[in-house]
Length: 236
Image (cartoon, rainbow, N blue to C red; front, side, top):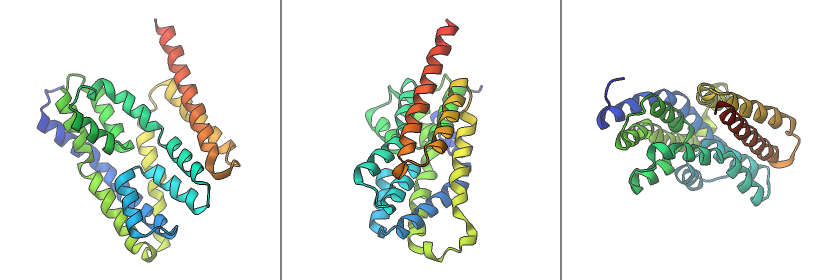
């Protein structure tokens, strides 16, 4: 593996994050449409996207608000959907934990599935990268994705009602997550957690206001963690 520099790391990140624009743009467009159809005005829609910048949690919150779910359920369910960010953050500590505060704060704000999935893969492939190169790579992955998320959310909120249904923008949501999740199912623990979350999400679909997702997410995390512990014990 050739040596990396801060500049080359940034450009690799930009290159590796670019394919997600294909699904990121319609994903953002769809959120703008859904949010305005749920009654949010343009200020609230853009505030949501800029402050939260978490597509799945945003869709979850808007969907629950549209169903008049209690505020506490909206908050808890959105937090549960975003609990994976806690695991993302924990897994990035060995690579970026020694970065300056402003860099860690930047990563914290911009941490989304797409940037994380390609970055963690790059860090594992290039263990000799410096902390500065790792940050540059992460920044590269988000340099295009972030403004595209803002811009297309705005476009969706402004002209969403004029987009023909035949465009079926909701295709972007499952494709985005399949593209991110599939390459990350590398161990038995990953696969087990994914299988448990899918099965329980389907079985608990009858629970009100999407609370079945909360149960499914916690159960999947417990199963995945327990299998990892078991595998580590058996490896020693």
